[in-house]
Length: 181
Ligand SMILES: *Cc1c(COP(=O)(O)O)cnc(C)c1O
Image (tube, rainbow, N blue to C red):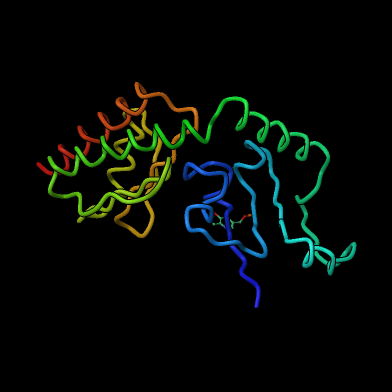
């Protein structure tokens, strides 16, 4: 049985380590990557332990956007930027700051049920539908989304600044305060 971990959203530093599984002391056999790997260009990748990779021959595992030379070059540039700009470290420290600010909001706003996540991947569970909150945040300049009806999802850029976190949480506070009224 193979342990296959989908790191499409959590990989490339999102949670403060290169891959989220590294927080758990486990070693997957296969990891899937996409999205952030291409820094905005379409790419998908499957990484496997050598034993497993060696069982795959050309044509056995295809992907439309898997291996184009332009996106592969873009992915290399992304990985280089993660290293050179110390984005794992930044995601960890800015992540801590973001969660501190979000937990401050939770103290003040009873409609926040829970703040959860890791690094720069945050979920804010509300006791109301989040759709109108997302729309109002967008109107005020904060782009977030809502999953499972009640969970606001915040995924800032890995090079986000403290000032931007302050601005974002400020907008979220004003919108949620308005809703609470
Ligand atoms: C987007 C997404 C996928 C699909 O990625 P593709 O590049 O469209 O194949 C898989 N898993 C997760 C968690 C995703 O967010």
